[in-house]
Length: 238
Image 1 (cartoon, helix red, strand yellow):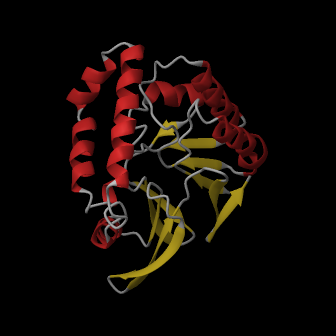
Image 2 (cartoon, rainbow, N blue to C red; image 1 turned 180 degrees about the vertical axis):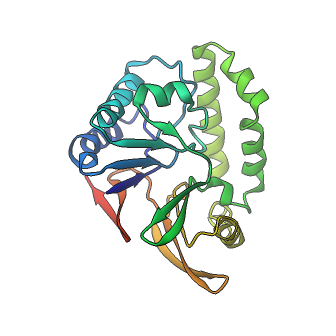
């Protein structure tokens, strides 16, 4: 069985989310054979050299999962795009591409975080282009951890302020972006997070029935998607 989670936004300031995560890893995740984390595992990620006790605790729980013989995959989100191979090695997982192909039953599927599908959010897409560039990332990672923490806090606040002033339609995925992603990857299922608008959407692309499945963010409750053969179900827990 495969599990899919996204948008946990783990941070030291939210011990309740960490408790949800620990419960998931101890009681629920062991029922799966593969775990896909589709971005925004952390509220922010300042580099794989973050040696805080908080990060060590999260890393250790993933490592225990991988060491039990299970497969673990991480996809970048808009909050933790600096996750890299050192983190993956510490957890026993693998960093997967921005668009990751998968077969579910007899259908081709793709996994995405979902932020790149928000075509109407032009301001964010420009910001995304900047922070995903090698030059910007190298410059940031050359700074001491304390400086990076301050920069991350500033970026989070600016992002929060910007989101409050945007219409909901702007921060949702664009239908044409979804259709293009499915067409270009010859897929009929898209699973993503990012928008915090969990749902199962039916659509038609090139006369084919398709599904767009949106994962929930974690807050007062956690969420995970299970895929067993061709059966796809969403689950919540507290």
